Amino acid sequence: MPSLKDLKNRIASVQSTRKITSAMKMVAASKLRRAQEQAEAGRPYAERMGRMLASLAANVQDSGNGPKLMTGTGADQVHLLIIISSDRGLCGAFNGSIVRESRRQILRLQSEGKTVKLLTVGRKARDQLRREFGALIVETYEDVGRRRLSFADADVVAQKVLSLFDAGEFDVCSVIYNKFKSAISQIVTVQQLVPFAVEAQVEETASAEAKAIYEFEPDEEQILAELLPRNLSIQVYRALLESAASEQGARMTAMDNATRNAGDMINKLTITYNRTRQAYITKELIEIISGAEAV
Amino acid sequence: MADKVEFELVSPEKLLTSQPVDMVVVPGSEGDFGVLAGHSPLISTVRPGVIDVYEGDRVVDRVFVAGGFAEVTETRCTVLAEEAIPVADIDRGKVEQDIRDLGEDLEDAKSDDEKARVEAKLAVARAKLDAAGATAH
Image (cartoon, rainbow over all chains, first blue to last red; front, top):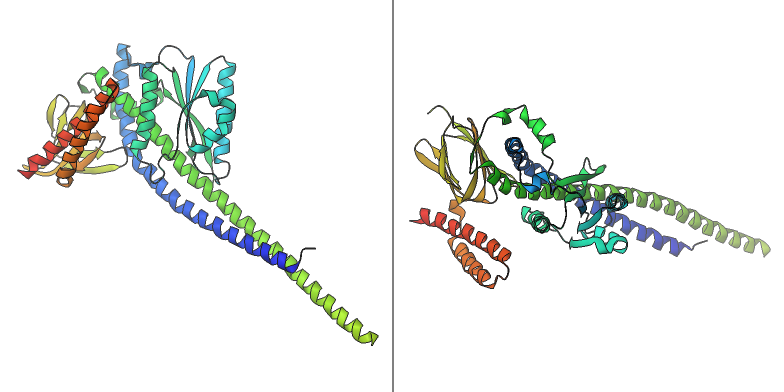
């Protein structure tokens, strides 16, 4: 049986753990709010970009010679996967589920005889995938948007992807990230970036005013050639924002659970402590009484 | 003037302005163009320069943009800007310093790629300085 002193120490240590986890939960909650606001603020740009792209694409598709970023290279031999994870742990299944999905995708593509290249954002994905697929990783980024995620951070990643594409290093590019649904639930999403699938967006907006016949200055192809790389940056930025919000959400939930568990543990330990104390008192009393009787 | 055009200025990070105005003049890559209500639909690229917002005959707002895209419909003018700051907030000294730094970078640039990127940045900085100069004098 543990002594009273041991129990006391243990209670104190669990209490300080609870303090830390509940502080982390609070921090995550405020960061989550900020991340959500940021994601909200970024939406108008992406929306309008999508609308513009849709009306452009509708025009260019008719002529049949769009830029490669949209139509693809005509092959799908080499796949580039952008894997977005976090830099820090203690956020539940956040990184685990990303890594699991990535592994599944990599193995599926490899079994189809495709070549896979990886680009990881965040320390955790790199650390967990390095052992198995270290040779596939072409580039890793750490500390992306550590203080506050800016568009420039996303642009760095997007520029790298573009330069790889221009060099003919891959045919298809997808991004794997945690999509933010709510603070409790994040959905691992695989989204294809190159070639960019416009169809879905065209249908959404075509019904509205996008049908208006635009003039283009300079011509469609040139605008599209400038717009598509921008769009790639935007898509990466959006994925990073979603991932940042998800990370904080996952951490908040994980820390909430940890705080509750610590509370339960403290209760249990306190009961044991009190029982042990009572037992000691009873034992001492018995000793005194039986000592007195013996006299 | 009764008819107004809805002017929206958006950067990747947030929606900067959304307001009805009488006219906006946008620095298109093939020349500036003014947008009044009822303008024919147009999509254009934007070069680094200043957007002038008119209320009646007066310029009420001048915003510097570092390139982007503009979409114009009959009732709306949307500018997707890469970077946007009001002309009044441009710090001349800082921009001049930037231009000097970029000039040095250009000399150090090794590959053509790198050179092109620095040149693009330099063009933006010069345009910014022009914009600031136009209001100072």
